[in-house]
Image 1 (tube, helix red, strand yellow):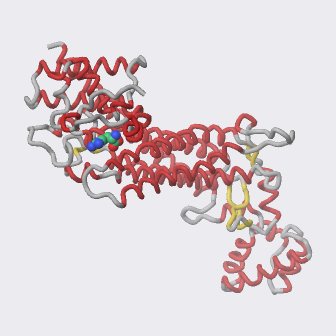
Image 2 (cartoon, helix red, strand yellow):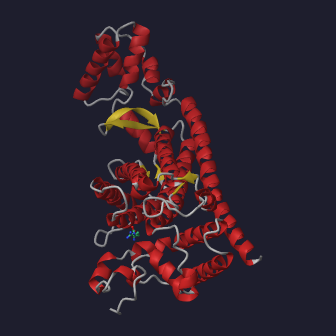
Image 3 (tube, protein in one colour):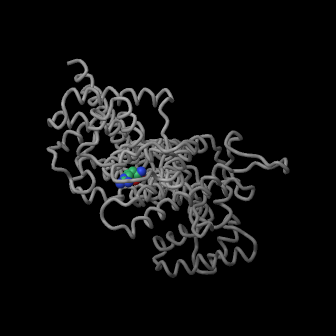
Length: 496
Ligand code: ARG
């Protein structure tokens, strides 16, 4: 290992850290994702320092010139973070000092600490990642809404305890996922709002005696507001915890979806067939077609939960102020974003390309008394008996049919058995009541299965999704505009 360079904070020290200390402490891998944000944050900080008369215009020009160069070098692969400089912040600052000299580069860190700087970088990076996740959720919702629009009358069994419960439609199933994922959008938006506040200017923990302008940096970085309390902001990682919880919940939901994909595609269920392009085979069993994407999604969920646990555990013992433990917040969060984004990129394609076996669904929903509740409801409505009594009669009927290995569709038996309980319903009426489509149609309560209600929910969810898409777009544009504004300010300095 090469001999470490002189540290930027070497003044107080009589010896350099050992190579072991350096390799134990650096955060270079995680920080690589932060370079462009660190540069943006530094540009904005320097512009503000000059506006406030803390550095001269000449200083600013030099600083911005070399920040531009480090950005170019980074884009062209010539600026690579060095572990001897510990982290992204000291790498960028060292580049400036090495190239512009201490008299200029050494001024950038006035009224700033790595403690607020690392938070600026993290806030800037995380908000963009949240927007990526939100876009992924929206495409998944699109995929489910497309299925829903085609299948409001496609009957299938609805399950409780993984046992046939009542008829639902494929659209009702699909819109349940939309309803669920819209809540993920809400949680992600809440995490976005917590994240989109400006830590810059909190400095080490106490603010500063320099006359900084935190509103200006807030505007140029596209934050909604400054995070005011300096000590609180330096100590806070709850925006990451919120984000990780939102990501964990997304994974819980994706994992439940995956579970359904896994068993719907079994021979036993045969309710769905995956496109070959989104399935895998076996190295030994030639006949196999496996739902690996769903299984891997399910299998990666724990890593995202782990990231949340990791962060919460990190936080629980920390006193106020910056603690180096905070450095450990990033790798698990990065991994969580990668996992969630990977899953959200592939799952909409998988869902869109899946073939739903509607005949099989109809066969199953007719085979196992899924309309029993509707018959019980009918007896309450038309035969003036209490629900408990009608439940008893229909339960008894099902028990008798099961004993004889029959179903409701053995109409004569169903009719005769009911008569034994003094319930006389004609066969044609029975055929009507016990038709899954009728049960579907009949559940017209708010949020129920009737095609009319499902169509209403499809429209409503579509509107909600469009609203989220508008917010995602507006937030994205706000970030881009802020960056353009920064570039414009930089151009103004150079064109003076
Ligand atoms: N690499 C550090 C982190 O990720 C940056 C801040 C370092 N601050 C300090 N006082 N050592 O948290």
